[in-house]
Image (cartoon, rainbow, N blue to C red; front, side, top):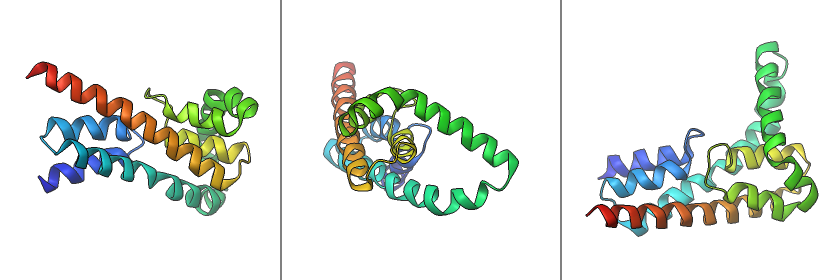
Length: 152
């Protein structure tokens, strides 16, 4: 059980699925539905401070290398294109809405990058990301619980 919880939390931290994958993994492996929600949500929220540190400190150092810079520009453009109009027009609410969509490419990673690129206040960006993650987790959690209940 501990290993399943750990894997669910790692999926929730991963940019390849975030809590959109961590929650279903936990629930399909018979983790308590409330514990799965809390741990996967918490793990997903931890991405914001890690990404903020990365963007402030590590990113500036690595931008000296051509291949990294090319990849960073690509990722930045994708985040800006996905969230750009909403964040520029609606600010906090646009970022929150962008992060809450439980579809690939919209999540705390892209939300943190978008907030950084548009120069949003850190506290507001964190709050928008956290609320967006919470709503996204609720959507995924409820959908998964209903789907699993439907199969039993």
